[in-house]
Image 1 (cartoon, helix red, strand yellow):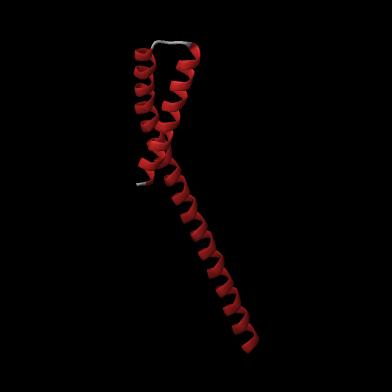
Image 2 (tube, helix red, strand yellow; image 1 turned 180 degrees about the vertical axis):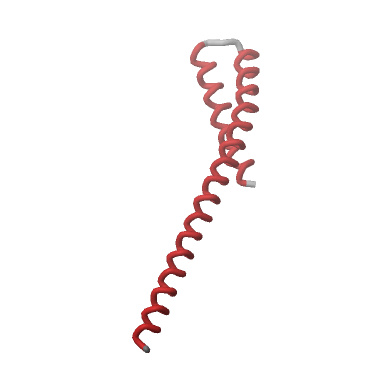
Length: 89
């Protein structure tokens, strides 16, 4: 779902910029709309790919952080257990 939303946002951005630039350069209506529709499709694909890549990076980073936190917690528990055992004997 997020991929499609990002793709649609990028497509809208590309389409609108293409229309504005085409109007400012004085191109014909057919050329402006044709290029804008091509840019719309290309930017939609680009937005979907970038959103998927971003999601993958975030998930991998989150998993690495969770692993690091779990490892730190295990070390603290092991240290506390060893200290407790050494003070009892």
